[in-house]
Amino acid sequence: MSASVPRLVIAAPSSGSGKTTVATGLMAAFAARGLAVSPHKVGPDYIDPGYHALATGRVGRNLDAYLCGPELVGPLFLHGAQGCDIAVVEGVMGLYDGAAGEGELASTAHVAKLLRAPVVLVVDASSQSRSVAALVHGFASWDPEVRVAGVILNKVASDRHEELLREALEQAGVPVLGVLRRAAQVDTPSRHLGLVPVAERRAAAVEAVAAMAAQVSEGCDLDALAGLARSAGALPGAAWDAVEAVSSPPPPLPFPSSRGSAPSTPPEGSAPRTPGRPERPRPQAPDRLVVAVAGGEAFTFSYAETTELLTAAGAEVVTFDPLRDEELPEGTAGLVIGGGFPEVYASELSANAPLRKAVAELAGSGAPVAAECAGLLYLCRELDGLPMCGVLDAGARMTELLTLGYRDAVAVGDSVLAAAGTRMRGHEFHRTAVEPGSGAEPAWGVRGPRPRVEGFVERGVHASYLHTHWASEPGVARRFVERCRTS
Image (cartoon, rainbow, N blue to C red; front, side, top):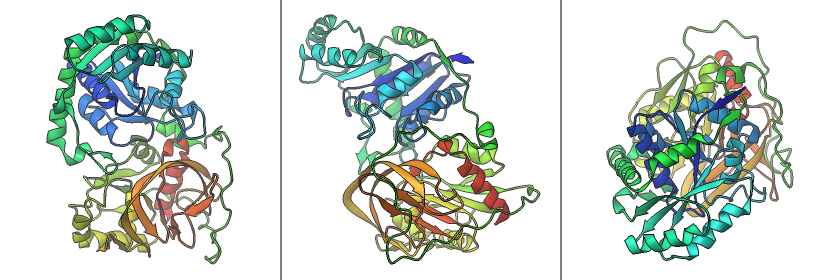
């Protein structure tokens, strides 16, 4: 089986070159032409897809060959692109930058090859003229399997500057498909972990996306870009399907082995592991099996496939806002709290005492609770001295240190998410610290040069700093929903 979805990958020599401006503006410009545009982002980033969704009216989706394995990149792409006229994929970092120590794995170039998609290179042309040809030639010739099929020049100062750049690039043999002048109005504000999410500045974000679309429409050859996307041809394989994914266990992912191994037991001095609760016969499902998922401005980090898998496993997913809702959704049987910025909203989260109490009571009842990063902080006793839910006997605080990178992890013991020994890959991205860093039963053993354990498993709670993509291990959703039925 194969599907033909016109597609482009928007890449750059390095971060800060203008990928997000060009990719988001291109998505919005194509959408303004009446095209159904499928938006995608290479890597684990949660924030850019929010801008993509604003530009296209469709859910922004991630394509991460590290978190999900290379074999799922094509199926997940086809799943997101179903019914669309064209797809735009924004790259990550520089074109050839991938997971540290893993070669090309998870780089934009790797994903472009898996998608058999042409690449458009966005080049920050400020402070250079003829040298741009050497730069583009190097990127176009580095890997013959990567088709760098066009260039968009960003931050061009003047007509004369553009003329010099075009003359130089004629020798590189890569066509110029767009020239963008400097434009402050398309800038988007950043803070300690990157761009400010759309949910926190929707009106301003709408204006910024409109400005990006206008700039790209004026400066780029949209017809040539659309024609280049159509040249991608068919992509073999079938689209990923959440119902099919949760129906049967997937085969082991063919990840390359990592250096080092995960600790098989908790640190010295901690309590021994206790086995998870045994599986019980599955009773008849209730009319409503509600899984509450945290949302709103404080909890904006989630992958669309998580909700789709929970729904496919039989849950009714209901979103709630911990900043405003004083109660969990009626009938809540399980709780998922993903990533975001609780440190920015610590005062407001702390002030919502009724909801903090409701979360603590739900966790105390043994109901399944899955928390990642921001969710971990919310479940702690306190965050920067302000009371949180108190589910975990741990304190959290902001730090100056950025913790960032992919993680290869193994479940230390049984939990509501995974059986002991289950291997998943995750991503850490935060400027906070939790003390202690793990409970008597840690959530994960992290493999690598410096093996360690981290996170907490207590009754039905699984809390960790690791962001994971559940499509890589659909059994996580199946197990979580089953525990919601039986706990």
